[in-house]
Amino acid sequence: TEHPPEHIFMILFFGFMLKDFLVGKVGFGNTLEVVHHVACMAVLMIVALYYTDGVPLLVVGAATFELGSGFYNVAVILHGKSPMANLGYLIGMTVTNVVAGVLTVVYGLHCYRLGLAMAQPTIMLIFACTLIFARQQFLFQ
Image 1 (cartoon, helix red, strand yellow):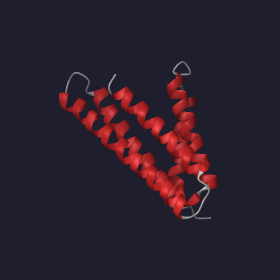
Image 2: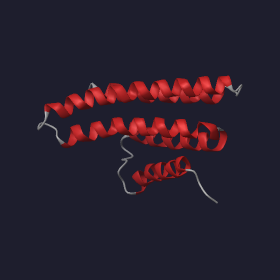
Image 3: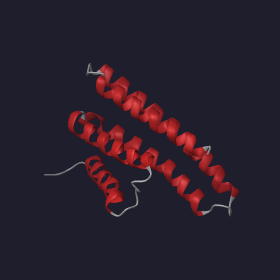
Image 4: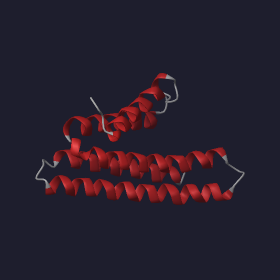
């Protein structure tokens, strides 16, 4: 059967999260990182299994979060070499977090408009807000 691109993205993204555990990139001594990866994998499964209409929005949200992580990676690689990298990280992470938050609210409103049970979008909103808060808190450490 043919799979839409967003399903392929979700499978690959889940695989990358799993790979981080298998190759030791995610250290089990870092509780926050483990929780983050497990939560991301759980969200992927929840949306894929229970709310397939939300898949495109999840893909955009995940890509948005990953773009923010990319700003972090550039700042780490150029640490001490480029003040612009740090500024880019500050602005890029904040903007991507705001966009991801807006997408989560749009997801909830979409579920509400369709008359779907609100438990799922509420869980997603709690997850997204927690992730956004943790990312912003890490940004200012």
